[in-house]
Length: 166
Image 1 (spheres, rainbow, N blue to C red):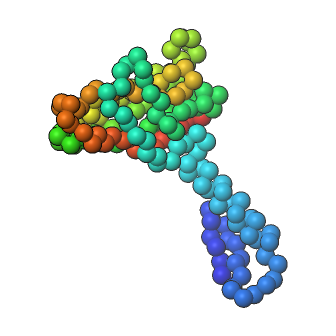
Image 2: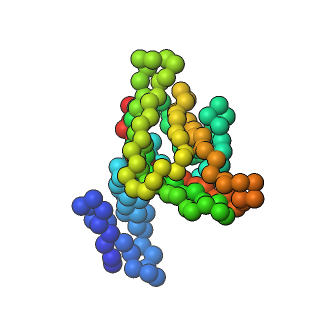
């Protein structure tokens, strides 16, 4: 008979080939593991995700960063750890790593969310972030193509978050 230890609680685990009724032990173990994982990630947390970033998106036609949205009924603030990579056939790759901090407040009905950015490593990648009143993070980007023969654009952001719930 094996033992599973989760959060200082011990659960009996049957050896392979034995068939005693361990349903309540396994249910207890599963609930405890779920609680531990929930406390580790927290409500509103986004696990590491990657999204494509297009080249030359104007500030009036911002695009949503898929998967990077916050429910204002649950989240009042969040820290977003990100890495951006961009390259074309004729340009050197550019990348940056940083932190976006977002905060929600109903004091200004036209701008409920604020966003700040800190680049920790790398050089500016000419991607600019904003957040709308629904909690959707959006971006616009500068054109990094050198000329009309420059092709093979690659651009993406990888991100993960921690959130402070309401």
